[in-house]
Length: 390
Ligand code: KIV
Ligand code: ZN
Image (cartoon, rainbow, N blue to C red; front, side, top):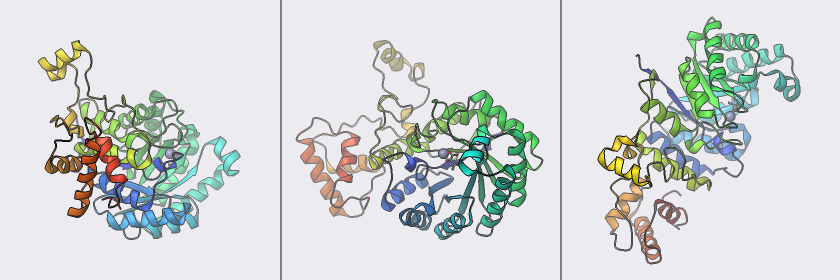
């Protein structure tokens, strides 16, 4: 089976931030972007530059700091948005403009109040303009999964001719079903005459809990970019979760004809950083990154795992960054062990003073608690006066 590259497009900093209550400061976005870069995410959607001065500055700062990932800004298919996005991503070594317009009958009639021909014309104009700033332009058909087939094909053919290099067909409202959504990609990729000139992409919301399943069905039908977020953060019920998608493809490489660049050992640390930054806790039974994801409670399971790990474990905890050396941190722990655990969580101290302060606070807390967990370490640094995150 051929093993094609699956582009991982992370939108934690844009669609993830659209979760009510999850908005992030520039410094927080930089911190998360650095972690995503460390994980070798291909494309980081850093924000929606026109949304606010703060978001413009955040996208600009991420574009200045990150070298290994492509930095992307979202833009509606209008001139002002595209020019603002282009300005924000200017410092990036590799940059992308992601422009979109809705293409479903309900969105065109009620939201845009435009005729399909006007939408098509505006989409082509937007992509043509965006190509003046970067040769990496993504076009999204918002509410694409509820769009009419022939119209979707016409607009896709036209925007590819105008220079779009990635075509994203989102399941904006999480209405899709895996069989149907996958078949839609197959039909469209087959019908569009120049479909081989672009990478097709999926972007799924989780309203029916199907975001990851729908994304994987799309991959099975020719899609080679998945848009996702850490911990599945995102509008309403969230987006497809990066960690679930990446580990599904990796664990079931016998099924999926693709592989990713992701260094999965950083997944847990990234999940913790996103959770502590946004204040959105990770449920204990969340796949891959939940506290119980690799815990075995029942006697039968424990017995099985002790005899042979693979009786009940389909992945290795350490492959996604769980600390399996069972080093318990408490009041007897020394500075080296505490520093090492911080580093496993992706937290590095720039100065000895910052480490000293964190270690002092660790000891104070350890006097009050039997065991110090990762969450406690996160709290120590996010509330510290010399936080490594500032
Ligand atoms: O859900 C959606 O359709 C989006 C687009 C802007 C890509 O987030
Ligand atoms: Zn979305």
